[in-house]
Image (cartoon, rainbow, N blue to C red; front, side, top):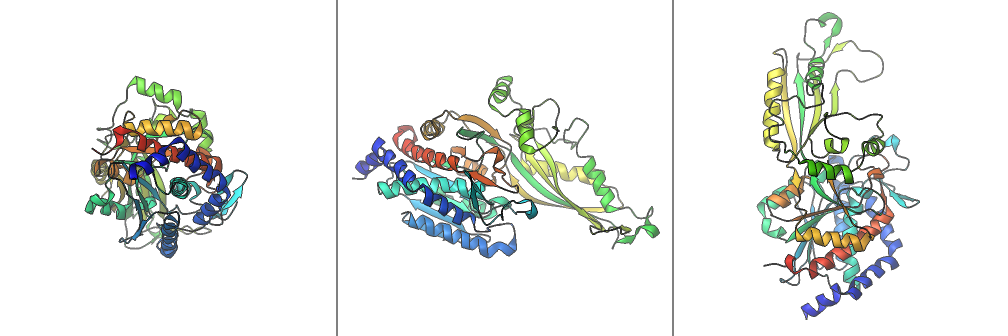
Length: 475
């Protein structure tokens, strides 16, 4: 009976019924996504904890409403994990669908053309914080599941939905759950949609992500702020010291000037770099996307290579001294900066942290003290492009978008993805539907709705293709 039911779901007719359902309910899907985006679920801001919880409850209720029989709101030390399952046939593969319902802060809010949590459809785009990162992309798969459940009463394969509320702040609660209870997340593959495709209607499969390590350095000098007229030239200024430390973090060629930093950075063949030049964005396209006048960074590499296969160090924030209007003659007692490292293949965040701490200790003058607080850490990810689950994703893209997907690298980091790969041993499909112009993390974030529906079609095809392929079945 189960086998016959699955055959009906995965047949051409079953898939077409699901896709027709999407076409019939397209307007409702957009309304529901708009409602989802309306929640100000900024997981990193403690004052938003109530809104994050309301968003999680809404998502859990929605998953129940589309027909998933097992849905739980898993409590953690941080924000809850929304976990849903449809597991009916041990002979079918199990897919873990990962996404996150937390969003980035909206600063600077004055640059938004529409209020960030009053989502609005303008033309063929839905504007709002989280529209593409990651609520819209997460919702792609939810709507594909709905389409099957409402037309066939079953899914082609077993499914786990794991949606967290802390991706933008490091995924610590989900990491703990994966380490403590790995059996609860057992699957045969994992799909993640939280990245970009190069152009409207042009699907892409991401095959690498950079790792990450973030920290904050606080430099302390005198016990309290000092009058610069009385003590200028006497007491060393912590803000000056910090500025000099920051200025020394790159050499004249744009390389990170921390001894040992590049020891484990993987080198790539001329063939791989030629492929990247052929399929990746040009320097001009990246500069247009960034709104930058000229490129900067490590010499000897294209901008696309710098952003994907090479590491980077960025200063994310700097504070110290007087910030108000008008002058104030003061030597600040302390200064701080937030720094983020993006790590290339084979770099270990722990080794990078040790190298950086040694470097700061070596260059810091004895007139001040420094405290380094480490934060988000994630290992780089490289995907096996020859795995059968990737072949299934290629076929799904062909049928969902009507075009062959391109393989692209991403310079971004999704902290939990490396855990799925290393701790759970899951083959990964990184299948993003956002555009480079959709403004992830920026004001006026949006999601291109034709990509939303192309993504749903692709997800429907992917679920069916996973069921058809014998090389993806449990052994």
